[in-house]
Length: 157
Image (cartoon, rainbow, N blue to C red; front, side):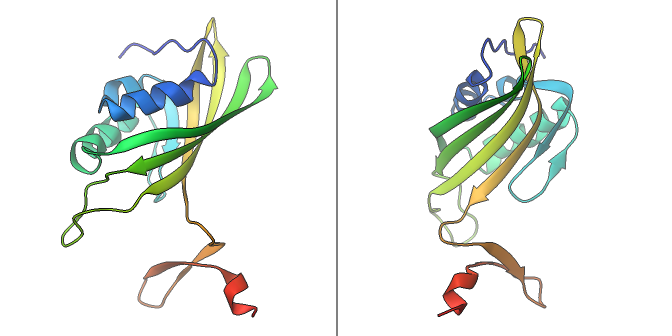
């Protein structure tokens, strides 16, 4: 799988969004080095470009086949001339429902990419995808393993 040639680190956000919306898992995976790491919103952790491809190929065909990912904001922070952290805030709509849920709500995420310039081009070494849950501070897990987002501030009143 050939690498996508990114001339600027912030281009990773644009190409990631394009690949997602085109349902092109190969293009998406081409942003990553062979031994890249990717942690998704539920903590699934993939350790190679091949694993990143397989996970997104499945997801874009089954879970997100009608979805649209929209770029909201990009921010780049250089750690050195050849290393940068790229934050991407994105909005996801039209995720495939499950069971009785036919339509899903809009989701918002922040993806953090650590990219390194190799030769003339930037490639991603690791990514973390985090779900944004408005007005919530953390999660709690009940005794029956149900996960719920909570805001401790609501209990201070």
